[in-house]
Image (cartoon, rainbow, N blue to C red; front, side):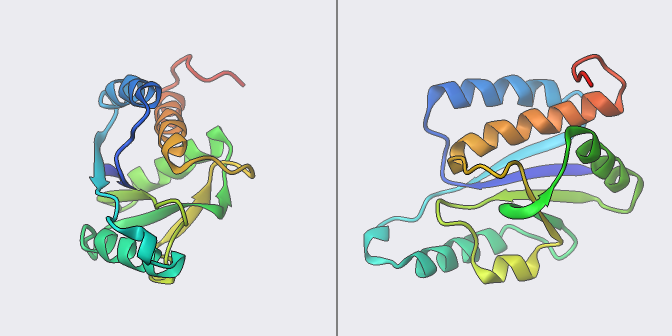
Length: 157
């Protein structure tokens, strides 16, 4: 299985980039991982939130294959503990999923077409975080999940 984290817009803050690099380097020992960045839309001042989400969805959907299992990182998505997320990933590994794509949308979330395409959604918290911070939180949780599956001492219960 291969995992892709697809995001809209580059990560700007150096502390987030440094944190992500730390966990991405650790993660490569467990699984094939790809971070795919779709450029932010230009001239969004003339677009409504709905139009912006629709245009982002068009760009995202172009990156997906019909065979991809797509999970949206969304505030209304399913909540996991670190252990239950590792169990979820293990089921995907055991199952027939070849490519698991997690998507972090832009600042306004997802267009309805993305919910229709997705195989599921997950929430990292009841709190709201910037879509850039979520990237770091997600890659850390992904690393934590694989360390749990391997029985390594990173996670403490």
